Amino acid sequence: MATPVDSMRGKQLLVQIGDGADPEVFTADCLINTDRGLRLTSDTTSETISYCDEPDSPAWTEIDKNGLTATITGSGKLHTTSVEDWFDWFTGNDAKNCRVLLNGVSAGKGGGHWQGAFKLTEWEITGPEREKVTSSVTLVSHGPVTWVPAV
View 1 (spheres, rainbow, N blue to C red):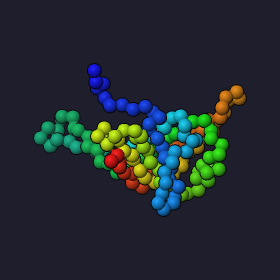
View 2 (view 1 turned 90 degrees about the vertical axis):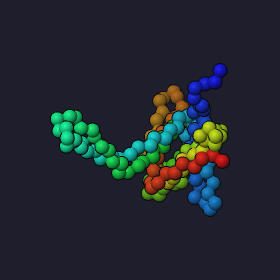
View 3 (view 1 turned 30 degrees about the horizontal axis):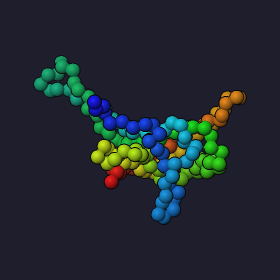
View 4 (view 1 turned 30 degrees about the vertical axis):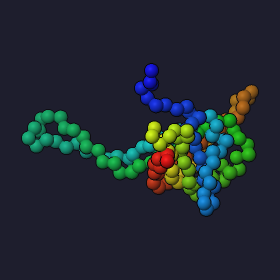
């Protein structure tokens, strides 16, 4: 029996960060080792347009998209050898090229990756006394993000 939806495991959603070289090499940093996500949002303006021939009827609201944003989130156990690089990224104003890869999914099933420049806007490190230290990051797009289908 076939499942109604093609699916994949969370570990196949992979955040990769470019090294800035030419050609650029993208790798997954071990600091994002548990949870990861991508949220695509749009800034909108709404306006309600009344119907001239039916002024007493409820009018529909029309939406215009003004801007698009992609936000990458990631978390996991703190990978200490990455701390200096992440801190430099956070304290600087540079964007880094990133990919969110649908790893292991073929092109015929919707595989590929989103790619664009991102700035590190939030970084949290927490550690309960008797547990491992964890870290979470938020990366926000700086310019366009594109979808690149798997080949």
